[in-house]
Image (tube, rainbow, N blue to C red; front, side):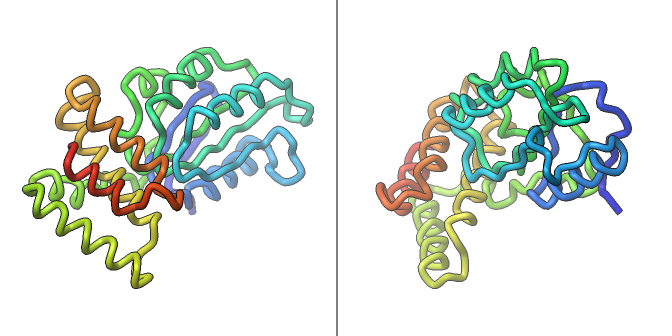
Length: 222
């Protein structure tokens, strides 16, 4: 049983809040209700990103510009992400506002606060029964002194080094901080901190700079 419904495809740009497990549910609904199969369909794009970047936005625009060849006559884009940069969102604005008549976009994100208001206003939310904002750790972090924040980061890094957690957990942690900043301060007031978080998420999977350096820069900047 799915946790949401999609009876009509009357709008072209949607977002869902939750984990990438929603991808399977969405594909089932598109296949069973709208008869749009994902198997062997060159016009069905389904991808997972740790951080969706401006380069990913450009690739999406290029794919969008190619007319569909599948019998459904539709191009489906399911994009699951843990984070998305401000630059990537700005690059998506026109695409989400004026998609081709054959294109349908579904963004799956861990928090609605990750989207800029200008982006969110161009999309329709799909409510799910499992939707919830996991901002507990982020809110706790922002209330701490710098010294306590660094202690919290040290604990996270120790867990990663002992393989109790992964870098993906660090990205989720950064997403929680970002969600609280969006909700409490808004884009304008928190712009500098949000850019620091964007950079930290963008480079968190790289070997250099180190994850420790990135997380400590967040502790000192937000």
